[in-house]
Image 1 (cartoon, rainbow, N blue to C red):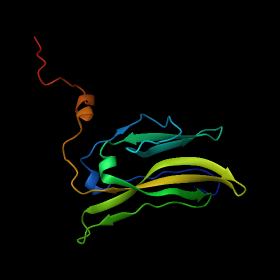
Image 2: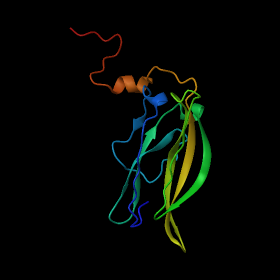
Image 3: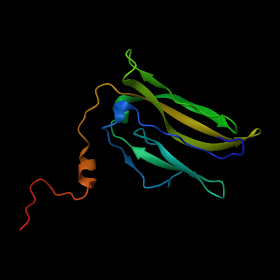
Image 4: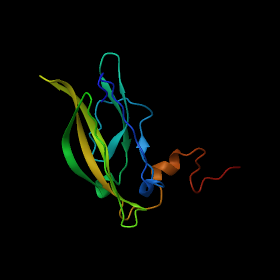
Length: 148
């Protein structure tokens, strides 16, 4: 959070997640990413000071993720930097942290953001894309559809 209150979210894709697919909203449309299978992929603060989030759904998040922090408070002039842990050869990511929800709050000290943080363990993640991803690619034809 910048000193002037401007909110920024910077993201990267760890190498253990390169061939994995998540379903993200088209843009920041919701006030909470409260699902246990989602994370914050983007955000927008409106002129009337409302915070909207772009949520990304990933069904395997429940299996490979774990809640590690439920209320990380970030105020003006502060930031949160997630952790990426590499293997002993410093080549592959073993786990990484991600922001799974952001809530805008306020108290006597002023406005702040409460972050929910999950840790994603790369482990044995399947390489095959999920069924919904295959159907969303254009053009999509069901396996046995015939054209005449």
